[in-house]
Length: 98
Image (cartoon, rainbow, N blue to C red; front, top):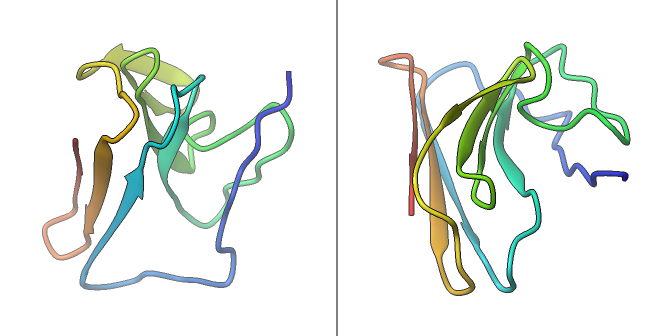
């Protein structure tokens, strides 16, 4: 299997608070969505959360991912859910919401 990755490599966040949302439009299949920092290098098998430079939430398997390791988190996403991603560089926190 090949996993698609969308990134903004020229966007560098160094201060402040940043937020984005994704609306789930169809039944998700292994969606890993989140944040990556400099050094993230995706390819067909490595996506966000699969290496030490990225962090992700997976709404199909209900996992948080970082460095290729995961922990249980949340409930399965369904079509119509809006998933929020907050990166707070002031307090050094990352939050996800559904």
